[in-house]
Length: 214
Image (cartoon, rainbow, N blue to C red):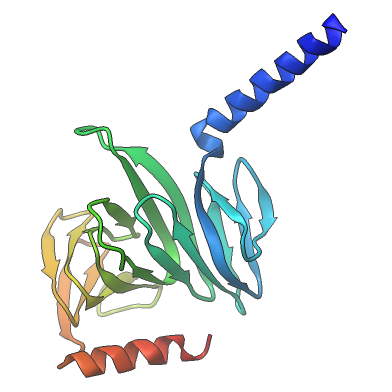
């Protein structure tokens, strides 16, 4: 009997250690999954279904016919990942105030971020060319692997609603993006600002067009 209790205690201790490890931390959950959607991570690997938990450090890959929506549990943003796209999600503690921050690395493809719940928690987005810092905003990121003038690849940022700050990773230039504005950020450190929308109605209509096929 004593041996059984000791074994149970050891198992319980190991389980607690695993669950408390940040590598196995539950940081988001799946709201919608369609087609080929898989993850690679320390906690779990394989296909992602609606309702599944997303863990710290998971790399999510959406295939040619896939679509995925997740909601992170820290600052409650909703992230839509479109076909032929890949992201990695993680959390980290702010070095200044010790608060937990949710971070999304865009590895390629198209992603829509909707931070529509008002709170002071920060969301950090990293893309191949830029970092994005935002609170309570709604925007589209599109990473393009096609030539643009002399640029081999670039990222397009469009603000649907709210304001975001985009920092180019190479040049460290900062650009404040307002409602309806679009910028191109390149790997060489350049920003190109282009006209996207003229009024709020065009913003909403264009956003509906993006989602219509899903």
